[in-house]
Image 1 (cartoon, helix red, strand yellow):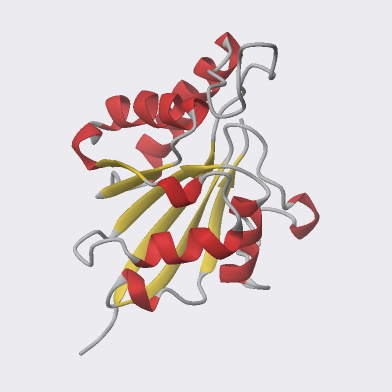
Image 2 (spheres, rainbow, N blue to C red):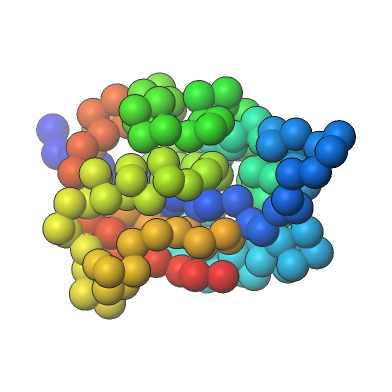
Length: 170
C-alpha cells in the first residue's frame, strides 16, 4: 500500500494585546492589527490549496480568535478542535497532539504559539526546505505567519520527516 500525501499547516496566532493587570496570558485577545493579520493569512491559505480537514487550536484566546477568523473564511468551522496540549506549545507536547489527529484528515491546520511551532517545523523538515519556501536563517514564525509542510504517511500517528514547501509571513 502506498502512503498518502499529508499537508501540515503550522500557523502562529496573530498579534495579541500585551499582558496587563486583569488580563492573563491565556486571555489575551487579538489587536485590530492581529485581526487584519488573521484575515490576510486566511486569504493566502485559501489560494494555497485544499482547505483543512482538521484544525487543532490552542485554548489561548489569541489562538482561538485567529483560528475562528481563518475557519470562517475557509468554511471549515466544523473542523475546529481546541487542544489543551497546544498551550503554551512546547514541541514535545505538540507532536503527540498532532499524532492523535484522525487518519481521514489529509490537511491539518495547527494554530498555536512560538517557539514550539517553529521548533516543530524545523524538527519535521530538518534541512528539507524547498528553496522557494524561505531562507533557513529566517526560521521563526512571526505573529500571523504560517508554513506548509508536506509529508508522506498513512496516518498522523506516523508523522515523520517532511519538506517545508511554503512559508508565509504576515
